[in-house]
Length: 478
Image (cartoon, rainbow, N blue to C red; front, side, top):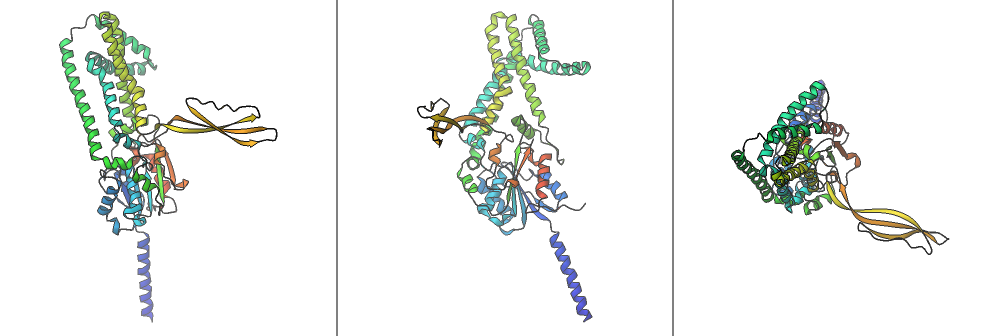
């Protein structure tokens, strides 16, 4: 009898051991990259989260050229998802969020994971995709390149002066400001340009040959940049057409995903960049951080570069405005050059940003409807005069015994709407219909490129992973 007791006790211990091991089994987390991304896209977070929480991270790579469904099928096949029902969470950036949703909708089914978390995903489409397909992006690029290179093409002397002046003045300005403790405003900059131009007007040698060489060099650089830009745009259009079609707002694919009844919990992290979103987005792409946890990309570098370029255009414009008075017989020529430089300055200051926001759908014309009421008595006429902006319709909403009625007036019209974005996807496009409000996380100060390495995203992730539902990821013991 005592042997039976020992055997049962041993079996109990073994069973408890297996139970403990099963409970301590790390959760499977799959990290899905976005359009034209790769397995390295989530590298920083996958490592950090794996160190902090009881998870096994998998960062698969899949093609994104042939449409979202093709990406989902390729992902499922490479990851063996048809035979794997142990995934806790899919965390997906941008287009990857739509890949995850398509996996749940049709490719694998509701057993694909216990929960899906999308980050900066165009759940309602990316307007930029439509503008690539309809040629608007290509047209915008051509206009921008033409504006920016008109000045340098026609005025190599102005460019040389402005670039040299900007280089010298920036250092001199910083030195004076650090010594005196006072800032130098633009009027002193004007004075310096006038003095330098006046001083060199009568003494400057004949730069005819040098200008000719510079014009050839600048022309060659311009042609190279133009060729590179437009060939890249043509390549994207030809190679990525199906994906661009799927990502366009109101596409057939998006309709099928957004009307599908979800079988598992989903949450959306919505990203909003601060002022200058376009420049910060581009800056984060160009100046990616090292593989250091939670270190932001320095998205201010591109803003400084933009400001420096804008100042070169402004300086060249002023240079030509001043120079035309010293060489009055070429007044018209210098005026035309100054206008070209001013066009470039204005494009860098405002026009590029305004055009870009139109391309990504952050600025758009939208139907508006407002309401007002008016008291109308017998013998009075409701003023329903139309205007160029609004159409008026009215209907009685309350009629009193004294023959007077309260009339509800509806004003229909169109207005320009500016919406915040992550520098690439407007906030409304990142929204996912049909999820509880508590499954929506707005993170400010983050652009589309920063999501894989940003303190704001880290905070949101920790809040989500600390939940008590399917999104929970247990912390590792320290």
